[in-house]
Length: 68
Image (cartoon, rainbow, N blue to C red; front, side, top):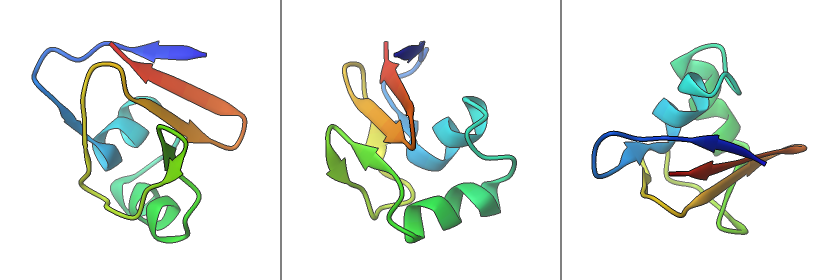
């Protein structure tokens, strides 16, 4: 499992997908969410701008990222 440290209270889901290089662009990140390919804490996430906080775990294919 990969970790991603945030400096603020939260990070938006599509921002994380880009920053963690799971998506090459904002458009690609949004499409991953729309297609139902992203899970947050084990549940499929449909909100592109979902606020992720410390302790949340994002999953895509065989990648897991824990927010720290």
